[in-house]
Length: 366
Image (tube, rainbow, N blue to C red; front, side, top):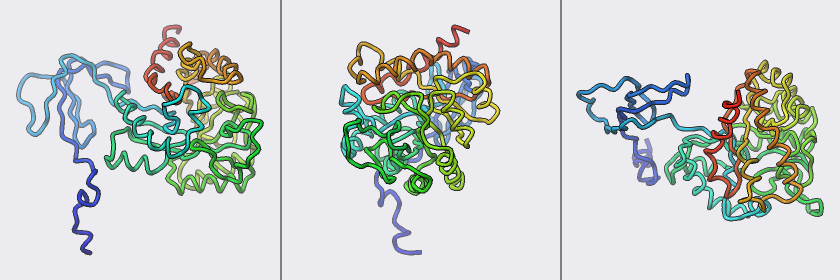
């Protein structure tokens, strides 16, 4: 044992979190997320930051060592999980170009605020689909500042002129050769660059790989119906991700793009607004999940944020907004596993919980 081994960890990293206290919540209406039922007047105990037991509330003695909280009939549920966020797209600007045009250091210094606000909204876990990096994830884990548990893709991978290439048609500077462009994504073309990009994101701490499989609303030079990346490029990225023990999820809107991705091994589809019934059934058969993100389109279409998108993106946003609820119906009827996602950018993040309200419209229409 070296002398360094005898130094307490809290002396080396004074920000480390203290072990969580044990809590006992009594007289709560607990939402059972596995069944959708509400357990009325129930008690729930936590230990080491995790749910320990759930049982009916009964008067009497409470176990020693627990901080007892009387919920008085309030509702209690496990932490929420947002499966599609972009922490790098921080508030402070009223138009999309400035949100993504943020210098990386400015974005990084504002991301702790964004993370803490997500936690305060009840999201104890989030999956960042492009932008968040390992130092942020580690800082939250160690207690430097509050935030949800992070699962990160590192940079989202895009072809030149794809959804992750945010240059205008008039910008001629080079960004390619597998290098990052801004904080959100990196450009890669051809099998060697795509393989290198996946391996490098894994090296830098990515939990999974995110690729851009079709055109998107925010990207200035592509169309929604475009296919992005070739068959061999997607297969190469999937193989590298699988070899590293992880998977690939893909931004894709159209049926053709969705099939192009899942036929080549992609395990998740982000958005999927134009999915049709046969493709949804194929997703269910292959165990491919879907993460709809309806709230971001709804917010960008409001009068409040009418200047957030440039004109060409407003047209695309109207298209995906119109088809979003129908895609939910199709995917649900096909038995596709669906995740909760928001994809809210910059100042729109305050609407993160409103995805629930939009999805309830689908339930009411059933």
